[in-house]
Amino acid sequence: RKEVEQDPGPFNVPEGATVAFNCTYSNSASQSFFWYRQDCRKEPKLLMSVYSSGNEDGRFTAQLNRASQYISLLIRDSKLSDSATYLCVVAHSNDYKLSFGAGTTVTVRA
Amino acid sequence: GAGVSQTPSNKVTEKGKYVELRCDPISGHTALYWYRQSLGQGPEFLIYFQGTGAADDSGLPNDRFFAVRPEGSVSTLKIQRTERGDSAVYLCASSPGTSGETTDTQYFGPGTRLTVL
Image (cartoon, rainbow over all chains, first blue to last red; front, side, top):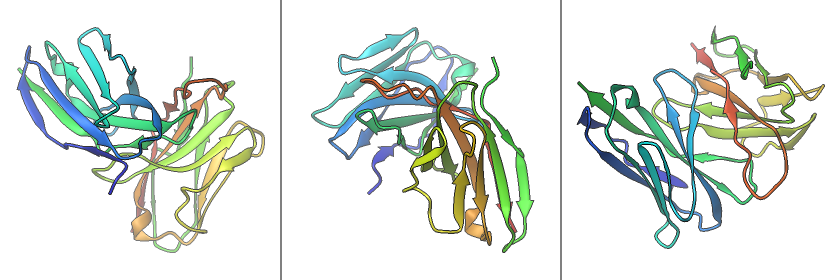
């Protein structure tokens, strides 16, 4: 079983829609959580860290549920530029070794 | 400022050949990482350097893979006797390497796409 599991999608949504997706992680010792964004044939880039209390960055909201070991990302008012693969990432406390999910593909259409 | 750079951007080689992939981290970053990303998958950890030393090479798949960072800046990932299964995008990342309560943010380079024929 992979350490981080994601629904691969694709999620096809119209501009302005809200889209949400989750990932689950298997290692209860995981302490740091992130969402990275990866455009086609580009490198992953940090979108946001995920904190226990949940956090928001503009149109993006991330939630962490430690009891159920899942992380969610919600995108409001989707833009065409949000089309990308979103990678769920976990790490142990102070751990340099990031564990990536396979990614969830989101396509926003006009 | 300049980000992480990697060369070459693409490398095509024949099975059995030796290849070297280069990573130039962000200036001042002491931590450097190599990951490998296969098609349809997320990046997988290969090796981590703190300064000149390999602090963790547990992700290297076998002894055909080796990496160095002799002066604590540029790193080279070396693959001997390449196999078709080595075909992937090899990503390098760097981070400030500061210790603390939170995981350092890792900044990725554009990757080297390796194709073994």
